[in-house]
Length: 579
Image 1 (cartoon, rainbow, N blue to C red):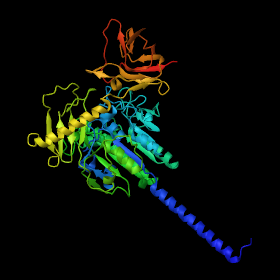
Image 2 (image 1 turned 30 degrees about the vertical axis):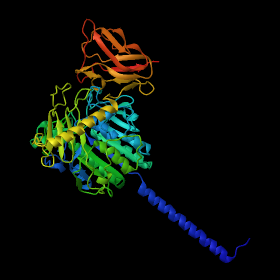
Image 3 (image 1 turned 90 degrees about the vertical axis):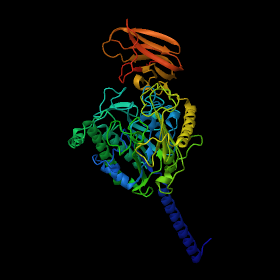
Image 4 (image 1 turned 180 degrees about the vertical axis):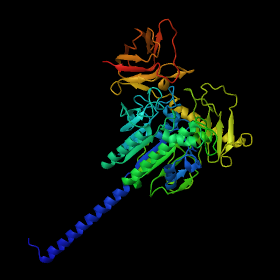
């Protein structure tokens, strides 16, 4: 049927209107998509950088211009808390839960192994479409299923154990270090902090080119010991009159600051700044004596100097510039906060201890609900009530048995040694009010008792278990000092689950002055031995499936068994399945 002229014009007008409408809808959808695009996340966690180790906390001797700039451009939480030592902070940060729930007890000797079944921030973000990468220090388990690649990180460049140069990565150095890239050992060329930032920037560029949001976890090993840094960084501080230890720490922090500046410039250059959440914080207080901005104590102590850390968050257009909040917050809050800020769903079955700080960080709320934060850590695999603990509220703080971190078997009094401080009036914790305000102390004490019982019920303080599965990891390195089960300062073997039974080549680090002797394996109630000549260090043993304590040792002929307990590689074992 032929259409009249006016009909043709009418349908042409309708077609134009339809096309215009489709264009508008498309533009609106594109605009909405850009607004709804998931923000990138960069989490920079430094190691042993205390509250006073930044210029913006009144330290006139240290040079941290980029950290100071970040504080001016973002929001600082002036009362942000972490655990007093490394691995507990990292476990809480990754899970949003108190670290005792995760299987982490302290930092070594079997106490820094997070259960593989824990749900991490990386796993949740990856499930929401994020590319996830870690570049630096993991310290939550070096074996399957506890490694970064088992816990949600698609890409990893890390060192093992609690620090470069510690077992099982001896010998090693901050310069040209041996690192583990996606599970493979390789030699880096350059300074460790520079290498971690290099890898992070390259990862970010790769993901951005593919249009994929990224989560970059940058837990540096600096300024943790050993205090290795180029002379150009630390010697100027020495000339200022600082002692060499402090000069080296400040030099390592200055190098960190330079890398942060490089990261910030890179975000701006790549036009990623406005769509990237950048968070900077420390993991605990300083290890050595130095400026603490008036706070008492340092690393391993639960006084403010040990658990209060620098914290700054930046997200242009969302987090108001140059703002501060004195609301108490902690490592357990970062996971729920970042889930909220990235629109990442939280599984209903996932029970968290932390709360969402996104309203506080974006300025939508000024105060948080009243709460208590709990901190405790000490040596040994059996936590004791009140030992080296603290309960922190917005105003008051209860401290238990301060300074007892290193006592594995604390001889406790009938009544616990407790101290009470009014942090609002006395942030330096100089006046103990335990006798003056017994009702407040009792209330905080009751809260601690409930918390301790609650976290104990989660896993009954059982560290994560190494799973020997040749399909996932072969060979498996068992580090005695870092991952062995210790009692009374002696290694008793390793708690493991043998998933792939069969014939294994077992090699042991015998140490110096080798003599003939027996390589012994005690597994599942059966003890077997193989005689080794002076120049031999390995033999073959059958391992059947099961779980329990796997004890392996070498005993020189005519000598008593030696139980190595130091931070050396002596007694470390490599298991390689042969069939």
